[in-house]
Length: 341
Image (cartoon, rainbow, N blue to C red; front, side):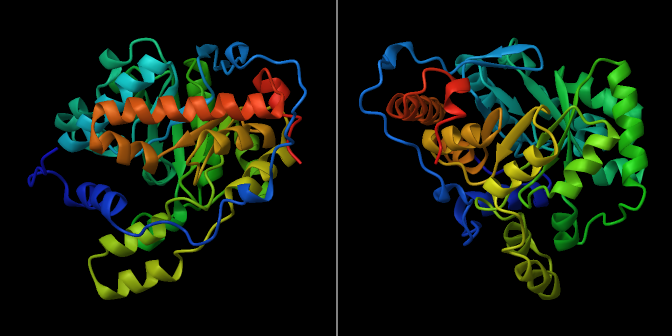
């Protein structure tokens, strides 16, 4: 892919940082604390293991999601199209990155339109809680849904990232506006998932989100890409860079983030993102209580290499998931939830 110099520099800088720089947490996801019991004598067939699931009424062939990463620029569109074609082929979920650019500049809306590449699978739209607090209302969110024919909407919560980039940091009316948004979208039949970006969800946050009426949570935790480190690399001055670097290890580990949400609700649909790299990681987050495991940077690296590399990466992850379940004696995702020690 070629760099488009006329595209918004911040979005391009984010992609370049995630592709080429050291943006990973030093702290772990916490998933290494858990392992599966090897079942050497279970009556089970690898070919008959069922990794399919359902979310929001849609059948998915696997509990895997391509996490939101980018949008609003030509390079982002190319990547999203590759992810969309892969999501459709494997019948897994995906989301576009923040649609703010397309909402503020309608000429950029075309850079998000991927539904023709994924006509049947589950696609999430995406706007920021900061934008809701700043004045985005139901009209803007309806436009975001229509822009990509979304099945559901992510509202991403990235207060720490906003602070590290010198962005929108006034969240004082968040709960009321989120509750109003959830209520309005519920009337339109559009589910709302609250999504962290890498800093994790505490039990208190989960309680507030459920109280506001969200239909699901992506508890994206620490252990993968640190968006504080990304913002440090993309900072416009030394003071902003120093500030962001101070918070490079800030966040709740992914495994803890899953358990935090499940301590509050056993039923709410839950996506787990943050440092998942293999099908074994996907199996672990499912066993800990998530409904889907999502990946961002690994999907970016694969898609940037080539569309075939992306297809191959997803195929490998799903094969790893199946073999992990086979070794643990779990013939279905339901069985998998009783296999960790």
